[in-house]
Image 1 (cartoon, rainbow, N blue to C red):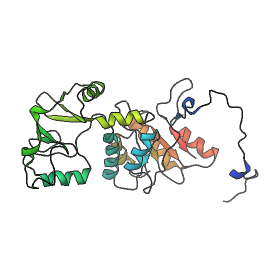
Image 2 (image 1 turned 90 degrees about the vertical axis):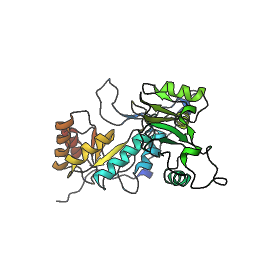
Image 3 (image 1 turned 180 degrees about the horizontal axis):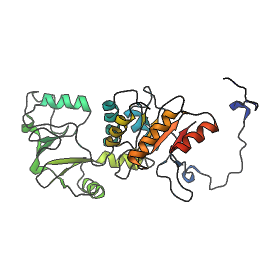
Image 4 (image 1 turned 45 degrees about the vertical axis):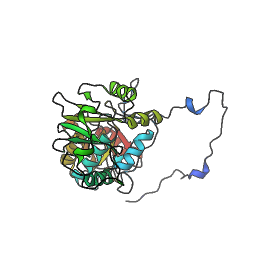
Length: 311
């Protein structure tokens, strides 16, 4: 049943921010925009805090993995939209986590029997100029070489040329063992003027690549939203229907925080969803709820256990 609010309504242009005194210490480098994203106890640090107070809407036209990477680079957080299959959404989350992992699993790999045409096709598909060569062409096969854009010239070579004939062979590569820390890997890259460093196990199987550009990127983007493993942080939208299947897939893909996506959050369905997450994950999985428009709706979701609430 409709009802009227007694208090007056306001618009933004009725308000004016009155400037105050600015001291010599009031400069951009002294300003912190760090903002808690989820609830926390007084006197403690929030489990997740944004470096800039900005998140993206859980919309298909806005929040894909590209937006998630862009926002995390600047210090914000994106919630990958949930109006897609569970598999596709989990894949988007995984791509964000792998984009800036420090230790990156290669997604463009070659075998010695492949050709220059395959190299060009992979470069067009993935945009990578560095491609490891493994015995079987898989991301974790035995490393036998690497191909970079310095190993071939399209104007002087046949597209049928075998990778084995122009790759940089394994015995001329600098690699690092599996227990190498990210700091040590970056030192090796810096000391040897490398663009990338393969990390291999005891049997010389490729595990990861570490890229100079990732180190340089972090230096030029000090506000990046990174998790404890130096990977970009990303959220994901969920609904109140298939959460029992979607949540485990998103958690496995590496989602740092979830949010129930609905235009009307003041409902038992959101409460049931939060209760299911608490039953199966305790407080380890952070989940927001909403949207609500008044104090009553806010209190309902807060009592239900939401870690943050969208207004």
